Length: 162
Image 1 (cartoon, rainbow, N blue to C red):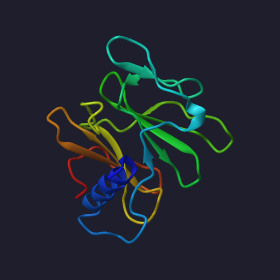
Image 2 (spheres, rainbow, N blue to C red):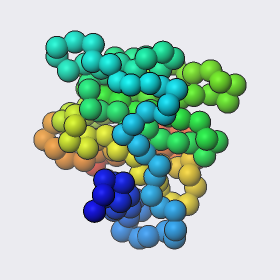
Image 3 (cartoon, one colour):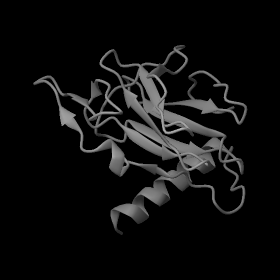
């Protein structure tokens, strides 16, 4: 199985777990990608301790091998990373061509570890493509979820959707 097919299978499985085990029709998988969009350029390692950054305009400083990209329904990009403090941060391109600031996702239990081991992922929740969950691995390797609702609010970190 090639990497793209494997990734789609993993994302579909994550989506089914997030949806309480129910497949909600076609198009359940997220458009998460390990590689940044072309305008983000290549990851740049910025220290011997495993910190990375993206070239301008994305920037940031985060744990290498912890980034995941999501193509939003409006065709703009959003990235999620594990910061050097083990918190999850996000940044997105805006409709006018600008960039948001790096924003920390709600903190409650939001520490993420194990970069490079699918530590970060994105899965859709239901049929609305604005409603998705960011997942990450906690220190004990348990999977945590933070769901973004269609209205832009976040659920906060928890070990299961329900």
